Image (cartoon, rainbow over all chains, first blue to last red):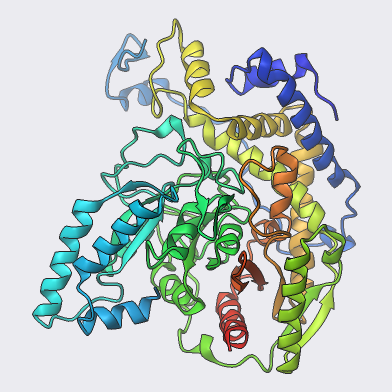
Length: 91
Length: 467
């Protein structure tokens, strides 16, 4: 799996990182090699037993959207103004 | 320096605690191995004076009272600098003690400082530290290993009686092997991670760096317990310190028949072979097993670890943590801080993690890696149904020269023999089987929660090899 300039730009935007032009070439080559290597797991033969209940499954909570009460949430914050949460100025 | 002999000498007044601590701190400064990021000289000396007063008054001493120890700089010590080897945290002061730190302080240990490490524990040579590499005590032109290179170097150089490190893919065992000390990574969940800076939460485990196996067991016994502050912490049965000294004549050990296919340094191969021959001469049963999945385990590791790291490191935004670069809006503030605060290896792993978790590739990489991880766990479960421990070299090579490995993938291969234990949550320890001209380690891996067996096997092998 090769990665190009556009792909790296997209990834760095998602990662909130700025990759300079000089660094880009190095990262494209190194990430390409890493992606090529990890690609090998696609050929891994899973055991038949894995389909049965082996007790090794990763139990995860279901992602369910629940209704929330805006006023209740805002009231729990230390400071608010007109339905906005007030935080210390950082910029 | 080992725990029992140092405690005996303190109690017998062969030297005072103040002398012991002063000697440690002086040698850290004199040796210039860069194994410490911060040293708590005044605090340590004051604690030492208290211990001396206790000894003078004939008071009862606690299990680790007066021992100078060190802590990896990704484990919180209240009120002290915590950098995790990164520019991002160069001024961060820890607001509380990690559970393991509380445990050690409660037993009277004296923390003399925080050890240098690869940035956010990402690295196998300690060269990614913002504070410069740790030098190998056997050859200053070589790396100490990583990421807990500072702790391994400190124990090897008698700067500390023992040290705590963290092991996500071999970060305790590989530097221990490079510096000629014992490095123990217990089963996942046996030691609280509360107060450990997260790299990959499902794989991270605090471990010990010690002079001998008995010391690993002593420290493990103190810091392994259930902790409500860590939801992954287990309520497992404590080890029995006297059991680890029992023989292993009823145990069956195994070596992976396929590890020879990897490029292994000839001296590592020869010393490993010699150690196995010595064990066979002692009539210890050693079989061969199939562990051909080691390559896949490394690929799984770099997917899962990068995915979790990219998520865990999202908190370093320049607001809650990190330096405050000026910016015109919030987005620019995040980007500026993260780009200037993180080094190349951290950026690389965040990019890989972001990629494998992105909507188009999540199933192909992240979910697939989780399936392969489950399969590897299952294979280990089968392997350990008939054997008690797996023996292999800790690393395919000995400590390499500084700056000699520049390709990240080549660097990742130095973890080829250690990552499987993290992927399956298994206990594993490295013990030195050679020290000159460069140290070489032998790794013993055991079944999940059979930490006591791993320590027992290691104790016996250490005894046979040093005889």
